[in-house]
Amino acid sequence: MKIAIIGATGNIGTRLVNEALSRHHAVTAIARDPSTLGKRPGLVTTAGDITKPDVLLPMLKGHDAVISALKFHGTDAPRLIDLVRRSGVKRYLVVGGAASLEIAPGQILLNAPNFPEAYRPEASAAKAFLDLLRQANDLEWTFLSPSAFIGPGERTGKFRLADNTLITGPDGKSSISYEDYAVAMIDEVETPKHIRARFTVGY
Image (cartoon, rainbow, N blue to C red; front, side):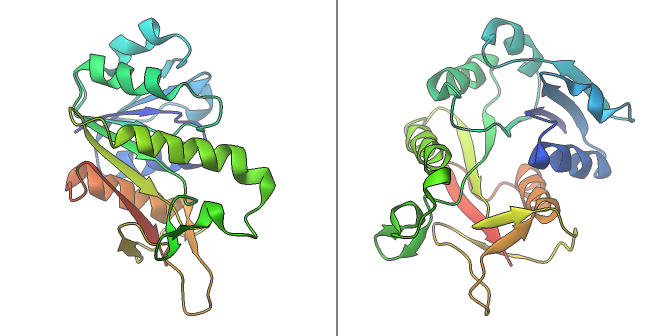
């Protein structure tokens, strides 16, 4: 498949590039400075910026799927979604946030009393992005939320999936590695099971 990844040099973006290439997909890696990704078979790197949609638009056309791995706070959500829409690519996958997941019936993590204030701007922007996506019935979108804690780790390929509920382990911890998150995302690209839906991944 031909996959365009916006924000390809970030923590998750780089893992998505690696995972997609390991499965022999053709990857267009888009970032402000993609030079850090080097040169590899199947990889095309290109400099692009969401603030310059007319430059970014032709980079997206002709792909089977677009994955957005951008931070939400400071990103113009309507512009980004419209950019994908105008590219003609129907399959749009988004690296989401965990704060909009339910921790109890009717209660999301973002509204928990102990939610860290430092994370609130990004978390609120992520929830708003998901709310906007849910109105985009003309796109085959998927929003993949990580667990509460995500960071460097192993690629085990062993994890659990859920729809809208935060996944926690027997120890009460909610976590996933960047590497296994990428596995779940590329699995969804290859075998879509969550069209116009959000799902989450965790151990």
